Image (cartoon, rainbow, N blue to C red; front, side):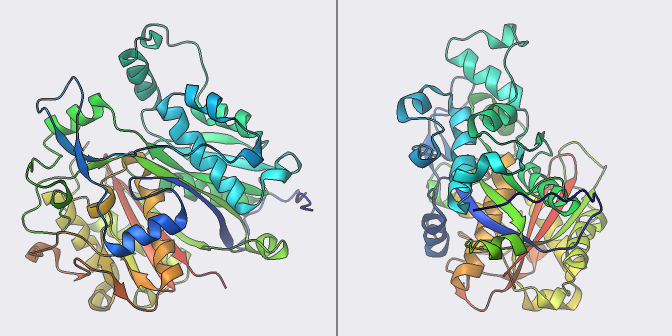
Amino acid sequence: MIVAARNSCVGITREPIAITGIGAVSPLGHSFDEITDSLLAGRSGVRSIDPGEFARESHQFAAAVEAIPTPPESLGVTDGREFARLTRLEQMVLSPVAHAVADAGLGPHREQLRIGLVLGLGAEQLKRWELDFLAGGSQVFEPSHGSTLVHQVARQMNLRGPAVTVAAACASSGYAMALGRTWLQAGWVDACVVGGCDVLSPTALAAFYNLRALSRRSDDPAKASRPFDRDRDGFVMGEGGACFVLEPLSTARGRDARVYGELAGIGMSSDAAHMVTPCSDSTQASRAITQALADAHVAADELDYINAHAAGTPVGDAAEAGAIRRALGSAVERVPVSSTKSMSGHLISGAAAFEAVACLAAIGRQAVPPTLNLDHPDEQCQLDHVPHVARERSVRVTASNSFGFGGANLCLVIREAA
């Protein structure tokens, strides 16, 4: 039996925050083990898709989700028929939240606890209106009705803590993780479900294509995403994401919960430079990394792996490599770096959370996932790359970078729990 904490103190504490539940929907699988197997085997989830009615090309490459798993029946949230009637975006949000809660073993205790919910989801209403309009609906002309997805999911899941949505472009779900940790350390919640997701849509595909942010390759889907490679020409869009249950480590140990790792450090900054182009000066991006290390009390040479944001854009990858070199100094030669977007595509709002799963996979299996298609490393991106195949090594402390449009810089330090 879990007893809810009744801490009236609002002061921030430094108790370690554990990750005790994982739920995911992704092109590389839906369970932690499936995703881990795919990442370490170097499997690509990218394929040819119909980009929709706004596209200039009849087919494009993207990492799409084939089917979204129904929430566990044990939660009593929804049955298969009800779930099938939800929109694709609603399914993409509800499924990982429900599976994370079930995985953490909190399902039967939801009403006794203050469980918060923080979802990273950019441009939520635009996506809902677009998908509804393409299905023949009229919400875009009558936008006043309906609630936000985060509150819809909180009702469906019967979560009684605070619930908010965070929008920080490609760093959205990472910002959600950061906010959830802050709530826990302030004593405002007993546990918190955090993460985020995104869906492919015709408008998003057309917009990124017209921005020339997407790869124009048309030969082989699996070879289109090429982070850090000198022949990279843009990113490949993906969809899906991940959610986690965060709770104090002492609480998790007290109820014998499975602890995947600790969310140990957070660093944030803003370039304040351009709406979409990364700043050529790496000062602010590197500051997010150094802040996260300092927050976790980790020295640069204690890092065992960095999951790079690197999406495969010419400017962005070079800028991030410079930020990593600046933040790590001489330790950069000893810290392996890879980009799992080469396999999953860029999950946009869900990218940071999904890449946190990759860090936990590295810790759980003691191996660093590779960067696919890194045939010719760019001289501007000199790092300790892990090309093509996974690298077995001791992994205890990891960092994950997420750099969103508008200059939203984020770094998370995730480590093995004590």
